[in-house]
View 1 (cartoon, rainbow, N blue to C red):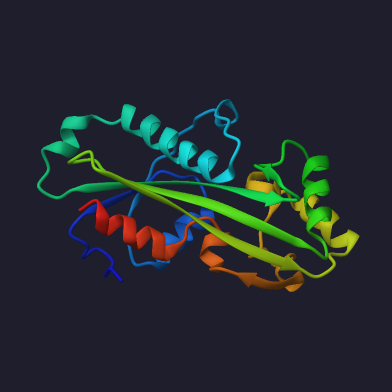
View 2 (cartoon, rainbow, N blue to C red):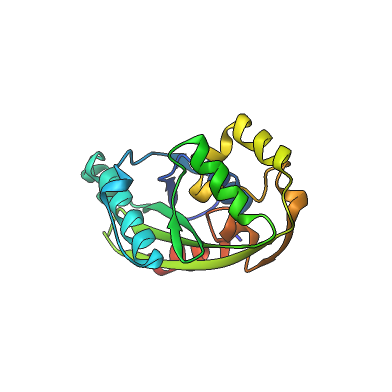
Length: 204
């Protein structure tokens, strides 16, 4: 576990996700945030693992293209860029962020009394050396029946529209209906801690 402000490197989190910010802060890192702003729908892969890896790479490339390279290559202290992506797999189909309230409703109804899997990638790029290391992690979430009124409240509140598969196990409306999680909760939330730590070490 790193001590805040005491790591021998700087960290950029290439994500707008509030949960990823929360998890990285819990890990003890200080970091700055940059967002990739890419068209995620333009990248298609058949397997969820391949899709999330390709998206994490595209996000890193987009951010790096906007950075003045010399700033990072000349520094004695390396800067490490973390990018990540996640999809939900349900009934054999890949689910990204819902495109509408109706789609979010359909997604969440599908989880009620059933199972959803999350597949998430993490890519760490050392901006000083160019070295990259990546991996993916999978978790499963089992749900109790989710009442219709809870689903409607989630849709109206709206946060579920901005996450993969409309799946937010940490949401106070959702969490009472989570039966069990196979894998780590931080993986379900979009940034697996153990994998991220491993990749940070590998690029140094």
